[in-house]
Amino acid sequence: MAIKLKKSYRFAVRSSFYISIVITLVLATLLWAFGQFNWLLLLVFWPISFLGSFLVVQSRVERFIYRRVKKIYDDVSLLESTNFSSKPITTDMRTLTEEIEKFAKDKKVEIDTLKIREEYRKDFLGNVSHELKTPLFTVQGYILTLLDGAMKDKKIMEKYLKRASKGVDRLIYIVKDLDMITKLEVGDLNLEKRRFDIIELIKNVFELLEMKAAKKHISLTFDMEYKAPIFVMGDDEKIQQVITNLLVNSIKYGHENGTTEVSVENLIKNKVIIRITDNGEGIPKQHIPRLFERFYRVDQSGSRKEGGSGLGLSIVKHIIEAHGEKIYVESEVDVGSEFSFTLEKAPNKTE
Image (cartoon, one colour):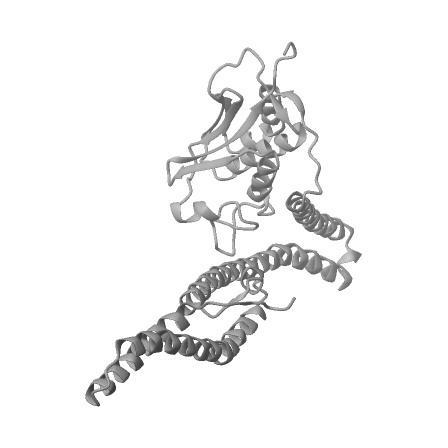
């Protein structure tokens, strides 16, 4: 689209006013010096000189300044700033300066955002590489050992094939989690919201993780006895995955003989908040803002005691946000952590 010129006469008017005043004063001085001073002549001369100066100055502004201003607009338009290039060109320097300053600020924000994304991209690629490399090399090592002759021993072959199978399972686990996050981000994973009892769902998760918790002598409990069901609206399968991931993390990083407590509380009229609290290791404050990033680990060392895809908390965040809800985290080192999220209350069947 062609760039339009928005004319400004402010500069020409002011300049013409000063020029006409100076010329009229010079003329008055000369007339007085030669004894021909005439007020009528000066009153006629001033508007004529003002009009002549205005036409000349405005013409020069449009021809001389416009070309340079147009070049500025053309240059910044190459950066595809639609907000800037869609405006008509102005020959008013103050307006132009304001527009250029605003454009520069907007571009600085865009550049800063791109830098943050670039850093995130580098971290993400490094983490993906690390998470995939370990099981891949494990599978490759066992298979190469078998090909080098170990398969002749049936016991060794069976043992190595089982270990290689575990490595493949871990790869599948990571890929499935990545696929779920991608679908959540682009909105391809449709949520099937229905009315369900959140207390019953939590009890089911407790039963599923009972053996895992027992290995570390960690008790999974409610904060109180819930005699009546609490009905909420949501995708029960996805919410079960959220609670499972949070409880698994609590068990992983909990102390021996520790406790993980779950509570369901009324938040506002149509909301409940589910809190999962443990007395485990806790999380240093500097790590909390990045907890929900893909593959982000509080333990940055290469050797990790606990497994997992590194995607659990990221999946939790995406599922909760897909429900239009919020997730929160509070933690203190050597005291414990609390993860909480909101859900919409389900209306009573009589309503």
